[in-house]
Image (cartoon, rainbow, N blue to C red; front, side, top):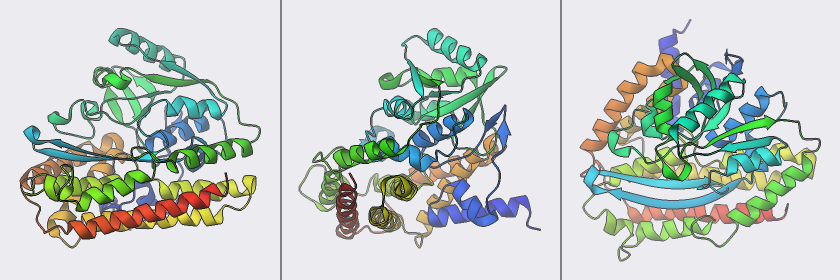
Length: 418
């Protein structure tokens, strides 16, 4: 029988090769398994934190049959966004890619819960004591809460201190355990965070400081069909719009910048000396593939939604396949950005997968994820000055352009359903 150590190594190796999340890679290696429970909360895992939180919250409340994919689709589906951040004083570059409908607004969670028939209660305060008291009251009442901690301060992603305050994704806090809480960040085993750490992380980012959302009343939707149609209409209007910040044209803008040596934000100019380019390439791979902290490009998940929606709204196969094709183009882009045949890049991929696997393993993965993160950030620092391989910006821009074209085609296919 394969030992637990060897099994985990096989799962991590698959993650590094395919970019899959731990739960997906594990399912491919060992098959489907029942969700473990902790304090009555089922740890179902998930891909995208925002939609997984809601799907898991509603399942906990007894609403059957609402998958993460369906939540994503009913919530408006997909968006697009590109921002390149440079922090030369910290020797750090990060590429932010937005993939969800209204990707830079946290009101998506409450809006989606309301659309699904759950009465969402939103609590926001600038005061740490009030925020802590509200969370304690909700947990004492048996109400899991969605909160937005700073990803660096929450600790278990082991990010360096210079990323303090850069933000993070929502997680579910479902139980108190003495001076700590249990957190669901798509992990498949209990993950404990000191309460003081969580409170500090919740209060760090001003744009969503101390925000908390609970579902006060939950009823199963009587008819999903109109909700599905509304979600599709939202996606067409948003992703298919003209904005270069929130819609498909964002990918066209990115494609131009990757190859433009004259634009001040063009990649050949920004990375003329190579400094920070490895960070940007890793940001592409980690941001595109589901293995990353935020769940990846979401196009395959949205295609799953369209498959699930077909019995409710009619034939959706062409649109689903169009988004799967877009997903394939995204994967090709990620592979081109951080090719596995470059040993240094392969090691970055392995360590990113090891870190994600350590988070998925909960408390038992603490040592493994700390070690992976330590080596990962040390290697990033070593490669900051110059990437280990030459980068063909024109070829990379071509990959981004194929993504842009595929996304335009997918939106047009979706438009016929709206």
